[in-house]
Length: 223
Image 1 (tube, rainbow, N blue to C red):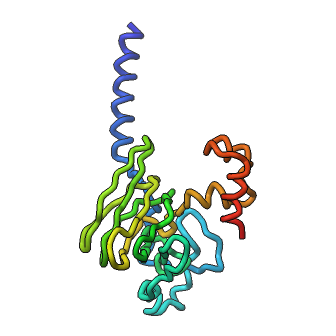
Image 2: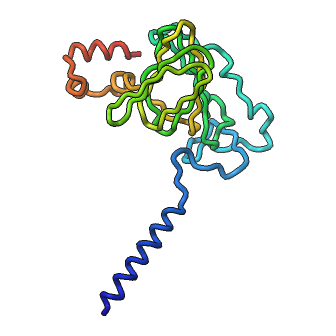
Image 3: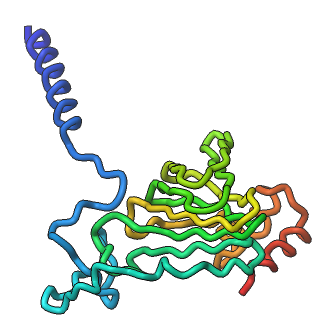
């Protein structure tokens, strides 16, 4: 008899627990702000919800504006691209708001360094030129498509991606991320340019390279 009473109670408890979990908020990016705004005091320590707030008495209209994305990026580098990131460090007004933006400039034939965002999904729109967007899934499937002016794209959080200028003019795109600090990780630099460095044995075995090749690649990322 006792078992006949206990089993229905356990089932009822599991149903109530399931319903409770369904109604709990699930945050996939930065926590929600607890005030109208919180202009970052960058001299403070970064915590879970961002930097400490600048005193409201010191806030001005300029704290809500940023002009750093106006300038054309310098693409005279080996990649032929430049990413001008407007995160909380560049634009303190983004603090606790869970958003940031990036200006992407790519010269003809240039490419953005393959990378992923550890803390954010990226959403962008092409303003000029034609770019091949590539997205690599955790199952090693590559999705690519030529993106034209006015077209929008999305890169799910944590997936490696890149842009390749396949047109005849420089590419300009703007992207946004649902984090004030998206956590951008560049694949090549992360593996071959980290400090302290990844052990050579790991790199040689993982990438199936001779030690001399590992040394050569590492030299490209030193300094």
